[in-house]
Amino acid sequence: MLISIHPLTWLMGAVAAAVGMFAEALCLLTIVLVHELGHAAAAKIYGWRIVKVELLPFGGKLETSEHSGRPLIEEWVVVLSGPFMHIPLAAAALCLFHAGIIEQAVYSLFFQLNVLIFLFNLLPVLPLDGGKMILLFLSFIRPYYYAYRLAIHISFFWLVCLLGAAVCFLPFYLQLLLTVSYITVQLLRMWKEKEYMFIRFLTSRFYEPVQLRMLCLHLDRRQTLLATVRRFRRNRTHFFIVDGEEDVTENQILNSFFQGKQSVGEVFKNDD
Image (cartoon, rainbow, N blue to C red; front, side, top):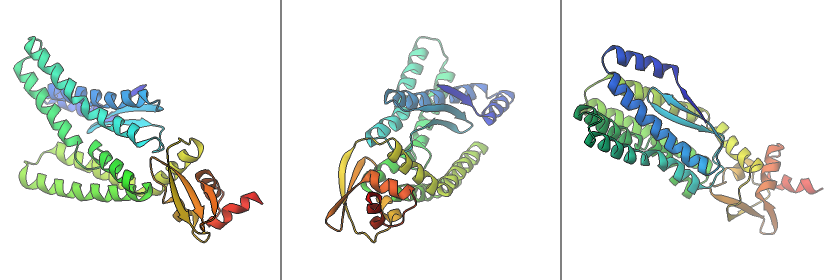
Protein backbone atom coordinates (compact mmCIF):
# COMPACT_ATOMS: atom_id res chain seq x y z
CA MET A 1 0.00 0.00 0.00
CA LEU A 2 1.42 3.34 -1.08
CA ILE A 3 1.41 6.21 1.41
CA SER A 4 2.12 9.58 -0.20
CA ILE A 5 2.45 13.05 1.25
CA HIS A 6 1.15 15.97 -0.81
CA PRO A 7 3.82 18.62 -1.59
CA LEU A 8 1.75 21.27 0.19
CA THR A 9 1.79 19.10 3.30
CA TRP A 10 5.60 19.19 3.30
CA LEU A 11 5.47 22.94 2.78
CA MET A 12 3.05 23.51 5.66
CA GLY A 13 5.15 21.24 7.86
CA ALA A 14 8.23 23.32 7.09
CA VAL A 15 6.36 26.53 7.84
CA ALA A 16 5.06 25.06 11.11
CA ALA A 17 8.59 24.11 12.15
CA ALA A 18 9.87 27.56 11.24
CA VAL A 19 7.27 29.34 13.43
CA GLY A 20 7.67 26.99 16.38
CA MET A 21 4.60 24.80 15.77
CA PHE A 22 6.42 21.57 14.93
CA ALA A 23 4.73 19.65 17.79
CA GLU A 24 1.28 20.68 16.52
CA ALA A 25 2.15 19.62 12.97
CA LEU A 26 3.56 16.28 14.12
CA CYS A 27 0.49 15.52 16.26
CA LEU A 28 -1.81 16.46 13.40
CA LEU A 29 0.07 14.30 10.90
CA THR A 30 0.04 11.31 13.28
CA ILE A 31 -3.72 11.58 13.89
CA VAL A 32 -4.55 11.92 10.20
CA LEU A 33 -2.27 9.02 9.24
CA VAL A 34 -3.79 6.64 11.81
CA HIS A 35 -7.28 7.76 10.79
CA GLU A 36 -6.62 6.96 7.14
CA LEU A 37 -4.93 3.66 8.00
CA GLY A 38 -8.15 2.71 9.79
CA HIS A 39 -10.04 3.21 6.52
CA ALA A 40 -7.38 1.31 4.61
CA ALA A 41 -7.35 -1.66 7.02
CA ALA A 42 -11.12 -2.11 6.71
CA ALA A 43 -10.94 -1.81 2.92
CA LYS A 44 -8.14 -4.38 2.82
CA ILE A 45 -10.18 -6.84 4.88
CA TYR A 46 -12.99 -6.64 2.30
CA GLY A 47 -10.56 -7.11 -0.57
CA TRP A 48 -10.87 -3.61 -1.98
CA ARG A 49 -8.17 -2.53 -4.41
CA ILE A 50 -6.31 0.25 -2.61
CA VAL A 51 -4.46 2.71 -4.83
CA LYS A 52 -2.88 4.89 -2.15
CA VAL A 53 -3.27 6.77 1.10
CA GLU A 54 -2.50 10.45 0.61
CA LEU A 55 -1.81 12.91 3.41
CA LEU A 56 -3.13 16.34 2.46
CA PRO A 57 -2.58 19.72 4.16
CA PHE A 58 -6.15 19.58 5.49
CA GLY A 59 -6.58 15.88 6.18
CA GLY A 60 -6.12 12.61 4.35
CA LYS A 61 -7.63 10.62 1.51
CA LEU A 62 -7.93 6.91 0.83
CA GLU A 63 -8.02 6.24 -2.89
CA THR A 64 -9.40 2.89 -4.09
CA SER A 65 -10.45 1.35 -7.39
CA GLU A 66 -13.95 0.58 -6.11
CA HIS A 67 -16.66 2.78 -7.64
CA SER A 68 -19.75 2.35 -5.44
CA GLY A 69 -20.32 -1.18 -6.67
CA ARG A 70 -19.70 -2.85 -3.32
CA PRO A 71 -22.40 -3.72 -0.74
CA LEU A 72 -23.39 -0.78 1.43
CA ILE A 73 -22.42 -2.61 4.62
CA GLU A 74 -18.81 -2.80 3.41
CA GLU A 75 -18.67 0.91 2.69
CA TRP A 76 -20.27 1.72 6.04
CA VAL A 77 -17.56 -0.26 7.81
CA VAL A 78 -14.79 1.36 5.76
CA VAL A 79 -16.14 4.87 6.41
CA LEU A 80 -16.66 4.29 10.15
CA SER A 81 -13.25 2.69 10.63
CA GLY A 82 -11.50 6.05 10.26
CA PRO A 83 -13.39 7.87 13.06
CA PHE A 84 -13.15 4.73 15.22
CA MET A 85 -9.34 5.02 15.24
CA HIS A 86 -9.57 8.19 17.31
CA ILE A 87 -10.54 6.04 20.33
CA PRO A 88 -7.34 3.94 20.44
CA LEU A 89 -5.39 7.11 19.65
CA ALA A 90 -6.81 8.79 22.76
CA ALA A 91 -6.18 5.66 24.83
CA ALA A 92 -2.57 5.40 23.61
CA ALA A 93 -1.89 9.05 24.42
CA LEU A 94 -3.34 8.60 27.90
CA CYS A 95 -1.15 5.56 28.54
CA LEU A 96 1.97 7.39 27.36
CA PHE A 97 1.12 10.32 29.63
CA HIS A 98 0.61 8.15 32.71
CA ALA A 99 3.81 6.26 31.89
CA GLY A 100 5.69 9.55 31.93
CA ILE A 101 6.77 9.26 28.30
CA ILE A 102 5.04 12.47 27.20
CA GLU A 103 4.49 15.66 29.15
CA GLN A 104 1.18 17.20 30.22
CA ALA A 105 1.40 19.92 27.55
CA VAL A 106 1.97 17.41 24.74
CA TYR A 107 -0.83 15.17 25.99
CA SER A 108 -3.27 18.11 26.22
CA LEU A 109 -2.34 19.26 22.71
CA PHE A 110 -2.72 15.77 21.24
CA PHE A 111 -6.04 15.20 23.04
CA GLN A 112 -7.48 18.51 21.80
CA LEU A 113 -6.38 17.93 18.21
CA ASN A 114 -7.70 14.36 18.28
CA VAL A 115 -11.14 15.52 19.43
CA LEU A 116 -11.16 18.44 17.00
CA ILE A 117 -10.32 16.29 13.97
CA PHE A 118 -12.82 13.63 15.06
CA LEU A 119 -15.68 16.14 15.34
CA PHE A 120 -14.72 18.09 12.22
CA ASN A 121 -14.54 14.90 10.17
CA LEU A 122 -18.10 13.98 11.17
CA LEU A 123 -19.58 17.19 9.73
CA PRO A 124 -22.25 16.34 7.10
CA VAL A 125 -20.14 17.70 4.26
CA LEU A 126 -18.50 15.75 1.44
CA PRO A 127 -15.74 14.61 1.13
CA LEU A 128 -15.55 14.31 4.93
CA ASP A 129 -16.65 11.04 6.53
CA GLY A 130 -19.82 12.70 7.84
CA GLY A 131 -20.75 13.63 4.26
CA LYS A 132 -20.02 10.08 3.11
CA MET A 133 -22.39 8.79 5.78
CA ILE A 134 -25.10 11.11 4.43
CA LEU A 135 -24.46 9.76 0.93
CA LEU A 136 -24.63 6.15 2.14
CA PHE A 137 -27.91 6.80 3.95
CA LEU A 138 -29.42 8.50 0.88
CA SER A 139 -28.18 5.62 -1.30
CA PHE A 140 -30.16 3.24 0.89
CA ILE A 141 -33.46 5.05 0.25
CA ARG A 142 -32.94 6.57 -3.20
CA PRO A 143 -31.36 5.61 -6.55
CA TYR A 144 -27.63 6.26 -6.62
CA TYR A 145 -27.80 9.00 -9.30
CA TYR A 146 -30.20 11.14 -7.28
CA ALA A 147 -28.61 10.30 -3.93
CA TYR A 148 -25.22 11.53 -5.17
CA ARG A 149 -26.64 14.84 -6.42
CA LEU A 150 -28.65 15.40 -3.25
CA ALA A 151 -25.64 14.64 -1.03
CA ILE A 152 -23.66 17.37 -2.81
CA HIS A 153 -26.53 19.86 -2.36
CA ILE A 154 -26.75 19.02 1.34
CA SER A 155 -22.97 19.40 1.66
CA PHE A 156 -23.04 22.87 0.09
CA PHE A 157 -25.86 23.92 2.42
CA TRP A 158 -24.04 22.78 5.56
CA LEU A 159 -20.73 24.22 4.37
CA VAL A 160 -22.31 27.66 4.01
CA CYS A 161 -23.97 27.32 7.44
CA LEU A 162 -20.73 26.22 9.08
CA LEU A 163 -18.72 28.97 7.44
CA GLY A 164 -21.26 31.55 8.60
CA ALA A 165 -21.16 30.20 12.15
CA ALA A 166 -17.36 30.20 12.14
CA VAL A 167 -17.19 33.80 10.94
CA CYS A 168 -19.67 34.90 13.62
CA PHE A 169 -18.44 32.91 16.60
CA LEU A 170 -14.83 31.89 15.98
CA PRO A 171 -11.74 34.05 15.63
CA PHE A 172 -10.41 34.24 12.10
CA TYR A 173 -7.40 32.14 11.32
CA LEU A 174 -5.76 31.01 8.11
CA GLN A 175 -6.18 27.26 8.65
CA LEU A 176 -9.98 27.57 8.75
CA LEU A 177 -10.07 29.58 5.54
CA LEU A 178 -7.78 27.13 3.74
CA THR A 179 -9.77 24.11 4.93
CA VAL A 180 -13.11 25.58 3.84
CA SER A 181 -11.60 26.61 0.51
CA TYR A 182 -10.28 23.07 -0.05
CA ILE A 183 -13.65 21.48 0.75
CA THR A 184 -15.43 23.96 -1.53
CA VAL A 185 -13.12 23.11 -4.42
CA GLN A 186 -13.68 19.38 -3.82
CA LEU A 187 -17.48 19.84 -3.80
CA LEU A 188 -17.39 21.85 -7.02
CA ARG A 189 -15.25 19.14 -8.58
CA MET A 190 -17.66 16.43 -7.42
CA TRP A 191 -20.59 18.35 -8.92
CA LYS A 192 -18.75 18.86 -12.20
CA GLU A 193 -17.87 15.16 -12.41
CA LYS A 194 -21.24 13.79 -11.22
CA GLU A 195 -22.14 12.30 -14.62
CA TYR A 196 -18.68 10.76 -14.94
CA MET A 197 -18.97 9.24 -11.46
CA PHE A 198 -22.38 7.82 -12.40
CA ILE A 199 -20.93 6.15 -15.50
CA ARG A 200 -18.15 4.67 -13.34
CA PHE A 201 -20.83 3.31 -11.02
CA LEU A 202 -22.64 1.68 -13.96
CA THR A 203 -19.38 0.36 -15.44
CA SER A 204 -18.47 -1.24 -12.13
CA ARG A 205 -21.85 -2.97 -11.95
CA PHE A 206 -21.53 -4.23 -15.52
CA TYR A 207 -17.95 -5.53 -15.49
CA GLU A 208 -17.63 -6.49 -11.81
CA PRO A 209 -21.15 -7.48 -10.73
CA VAL A 210 -21.78 -8.37 -7.09
CA GLN A 211 -24.84 -10.48 -6.33
CA LEU A 212 -27.08 -8.44 -4.04
CA ARG A 213 -30.66 -8.51 -2.83
CA MET A 214 -33.06 -8.53 -5.80
CA LEU A 215 -35.19 -5.47 -6.62
CA CYS A 216 -37.93 -5.79 -9.25
CA LEU A 217 -38.84 -2.70 -11.28
CA HIS A 218 -41.56 -2.25 -13.88
CA LEU A 219 -40.83 -0.56 -17.20
CA ASP A 220 -42.52 0.13 -20.48
CA ARG A 221 -40.87 -0.15 -23.88
CA ARG A 222 -41.02 3.59 -24.57
CA GLN A 223 -38.99 4.48 -21.50
CA THR A 224 -35.43 5.63 -22.19
CA LEU A 225 -32.50 3.54 -21.05
CA LEU A 226 -30.95 6.63 -19.46
CA ALA A 227 -34.01 7.11 -17.23
CA THR A 228 -33.91 3.39 -16.44
CA VAL A 229 -30.28 3.23 -15.31
CA ARG A 230 -30.82 6.35 -13.22
CA ARG A 231 -33.21 4.24 -11.14
CA PHE A 232 -30.42 1.84 -10.18
CA ARG A 233 -29.87 1.56 -6.45
CA ARG A 234 -26.85 0.71 -4.38
CA ASN A 235 -27.01 -2.63 -2.59
CA ARG A 236 -29.53 -4.09 -5.05
CA THR A 237 -29.40 -6.32 -8.13
CA HIS A 238 -32.18 -5.21 -10.46
CA PHE A 239 -34.69 -7.29 -12.35
CA PHE A 240 -37.13 -5.65 -14.78
CA ILE A 241 -40.58 -6.53 -16.05
CA VAL A 242 -41.39 -4.73 -19.30
CA ASP A 243 -45.04 -3.95 -20.07
CA GLY A 244 -46.07 -6.47 -17.43
CA GLU A 245 -44.89 -9.40 -19.56
CA GLU A 246 -41.26 -9.75 -20.62
CA ASP A 247 -38.33 -10.10 -18.22
CA VAL A 248 -35.07 -8.19 -18.58
CA THR A 249 -31.97 -8.51 -16.42
CA GLU A 250 -29.78 -5.69 -15.16
CA ASN A 251 -26.94 -6.94 -17.35
CA GLN A 252 -29.13 -6.73 -20.47
CA ILE A 253 -30.13 -3.17 -19.66
CA LEU A 254 -26.53 -2.11 -19.07
CA ASN A 255 -25.29 -3.90 -22.18
CA SER A 256 -27.83 -2.09 -24.34
CA PHE A 257 -27.10 1.23 -22.64
CA PHE A 258 -23.35 0.96 -23.30
CA GLN A 259 -24.06 -0.05 -26.91
CA GLY A 260 -25.74 3.33 -27.36
CA LYS A 261 -29.33 2.11 -27.56
CA GLN A 262 -31.91 4.68 -26.50
CA SER A 263 -35.11 2.96 -25.35
CA VAL A 264 -36.08 -0.12 -23.36
CA GLY A 265 -37.76 -1.55 -26.46
CA GLU A 266 -34.41 -1.73 -28.22
CA VAL A 267 -33.08 -4.15 -25.61
CA PHE A 268 -35.03 -6.98 -27.25
CA LYS A 269 -33.33 -6.38 -30.60
CA ASN A 270 -30.26 -8.08 -29.11
CA ASP A 271 -32.06 -11.37 -29.52
CA ASP A 272 -32.84 -10.92 -33.21
